[in-house]
Amino acid sequence: MDKQTLMEQAVQAAYENVVSGRGGPFGAIVVKDGVIIGTGRNEVTALHDPTAHAEVQAIREACRHLNDHQLNGCDIYTSCEPCPMCIGAIYWARPRAVYYACTKEDAAKAGFDDAFIYEQLELPKEQRSIEMTRIYPPQGDKPFQAWGNSPNRIEY
Image (cartoon, rainbow, N blue to C red; front, side):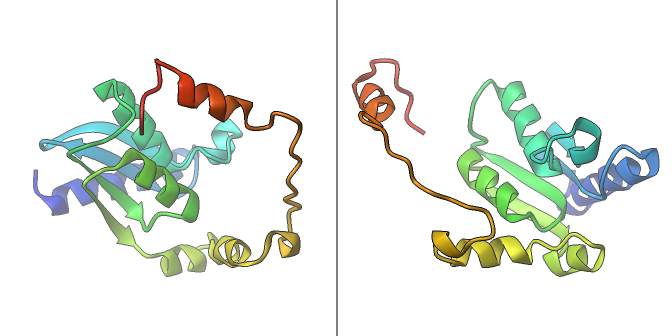
């Protein structure tokens, strides 16, 4: 399938999600070697899960399909430019490319404005709207010490 057809499938997933009443107007697919191996739709309200964005859902399904935590050699097609959370998930998953239809400005016009998240990230922690305070107990780095010494460690 060509890129245009794949993008149309991501947009169709978003459209069907809205029409079905299941969730927001976002859809995504993960493709490897021309085959769709993951499909995601925004299911934040249906699942009561703020992380159930289309891209995250598609990444989860594709990783299960590949039995891997990374999407090497894969492409993601998404109906809209990814939000900050999804961008983070995408970088952790390490696909080859991301293609999107609508922009974050289009999403903002529809009531999905992520600008405040970008603004909050730029602020010093003590000025953010959600309190973020470090509490460091004795041996707070114990998990990292165990990780560094673990023979089962898988780098990612």
